[in-house]
Image 1: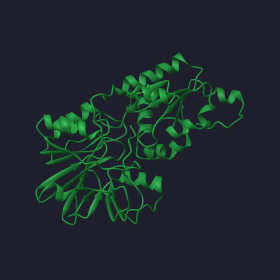
Image 2 (image 1 turned 180 degrees about the vertical axis):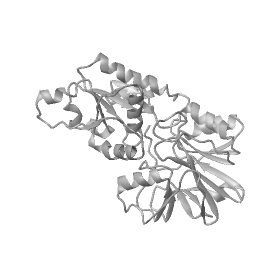
Image 3 (image 1 turned 180 degrees about the horizontal axis):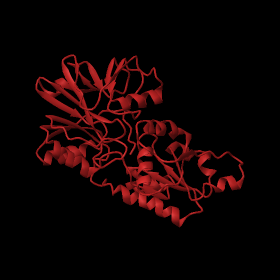
Image 4 (image 1 turned 90 degrees about the vertical axis):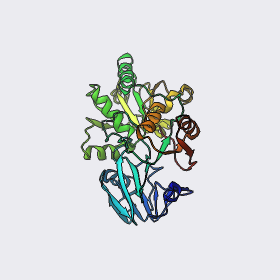
Length: 339
């Protein structure tokens, strides 16, 4: 059997004809294997969903308990037979519950990473190298300019800014799933014990993470109504207030005392992006593998063939070819590029 007979790109996503299921489909299908809970990979409306328990909980939190008629919870490493195709999930290190989809049939093994990273994350299980014949890798940051610095150094910049500008509220932009909780944990590990204030859009997922045994320390709602007394506003001076990127574009962000905008993303490597968004303190903190992690992972897995999806596909394919690997871009559409 050829790889393209086992998994093939379609307008709905990667499809497995022998098993009759999709991996992270972008439209409603009868059966889906979901790698993680981000909305561009985990959508409501599928007839049946197989995912880790954490990912199923995240989907229920985001879409409601009836997001699918049939849920199948699979622990990491647990093998499931789908119409004769063996499917199991291996840790991806991206966010809580994230997994690589391992598909085996008639002696052929293919691994789809979903989104992943290699560096340590205190909020999820680290990436596991799974040897395979065909490795299907994301490439969000798949060009050499993207080399992420040490997470601790980036967090140190934030804490230093708090001491340099104690009169300013530090508004930290984070994606609601994964980035928010990871940044909070990194801040706690750096010794910050004060209350962190969070936008209401972060609360449900922060509660979910804590319910899965990931302590985030004291959190309080970042509520500040229009026209509230200045003494109430003053309590946020020199404090960390976290919210999703969308909140920074409305009046909520402007109600805090002399707000200093911070944004956490691998895209902050591109200074023009930070400047265009009015970000004073860009922090390069990503939940995706950078160029060095992507290339090292290919070497570690050492597949017969590399397929590259959603991101800067061509550069990683060219690098792989220069290393002697067969490689091709999949050109899948419908996946966002949160960093």
